[in-house]
Length: 286
Length: 311
Image 1 (cartoon, rainbow over the protein chains, first blue to last red):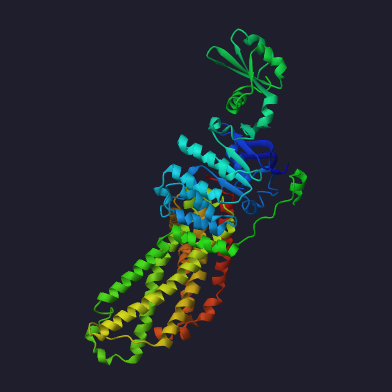
Image 2 (image 1 turned 45 degrees about the horizontal axis):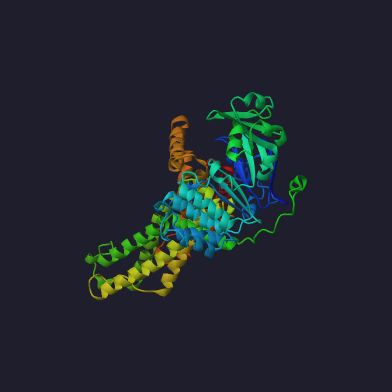
């Protein structure tokens, strides 16, 4: 499968702080990839490197181009949406449409209008007159109308209520995504979108803690729920993380077979959110 | 495919990017500036409207024409009034536009960082070079051209109003229409506007560099270091080189334009096209050094915008 993004030994330092340290990962065409990590882990820095917004060390290729020297070419095929507050407050809706139409050769005005018709947004309104949810809808309308190959979303639903968040991702999945397009998404609200992802990359303290397709997660990671009495036997198999819940213990294993663990308790594939917490808080391969 | 990409084995060759549409993009970027900085067109329009209102209600044209026997104002003097009023319109509108332009230059690359909208602008396929160039062109070319047209139309309207009032006897009939004199006046104005844009280009570019660079208060950064520099030089070295340089960069070219061999060439507004020292002004070394400096400063502003990351 063609790689849309290839990063190898990607590093970025802010003075003594290492935002990214020799990070390597790959994103294939037609995937929806979650770039997940705690605050300050380096997610946004990685996105900015991909978009050519910040200098970096190492090798990075986006759609076969170098973001350091070919940013302008890359941006013809890449769409980017940072959190909701980046549309200028003075801009009118009709101006936003005219602007995108004027500068983006792949902007389809009719498509944007089609989406905006479903909303309460007035064309003459300025961004500052719209609610936060409406601003996101406007930005989404602009993005949906661009025939891009890679869509990069950095916390796109931050600060929105549940209804807007759900609508945002539903629209993205139903009206935008197809097998020719790739979406790279960072979010804090992992639980809400984990069904969306085809791949996940966990970043912790500037390094990749996990990079896998969702379908492969089950063969590498298992969650075993056992009673407190049975926990010591399970611990002997060296889980990398465990947590107690209502008197039962959930243990997370990496690289153990289902046959080995099944007799000890209830076995399941961990959710991405649970696996994320386990990976961030547990010692890997403990 | 570059060597780095090949080394990475990043799959298929780069897909054909959509064709660049630079001309259309530049036009859109210029329109964008007028959407954001409404003062660029609103202020000159308001000033023009105010001048027209003055023409509607004024009783004299500033000189004490009531004391003069109007019948004795000869044709030459009436043509002079035509040219003088023509220049007055441009001078007033240009001054208003220059003040707005200074604020726009200081704000244009700062505001987008302050409100983080730079992340939106940069999410679209517009290069930093074209963005910076569009903002510069708006201030030094598009706005002055707009002032030229607005002043010409506004002056004609005002002249029409005045003549109509003069015909009814409400005001003295001090101006006359003379197409050749008017066209000569427009030529002088256009050349002066071009000269002004070239001469002030480094100031605009310096303001834009500051706008791209400073973390806050670009206006303060534009004024305070110069004021402190002048005071420092005066106190420590007892000299005024910086002050004299600033004075020179403010009006130096007009001195060149209005002098020949050390003598003033001004013989009234009707003969400016012939009298002014255009050759010396347009071949002035400092004028073109300033243009070069403007190019360097714009390049600096573009580089800062390209790599600055304070979002």
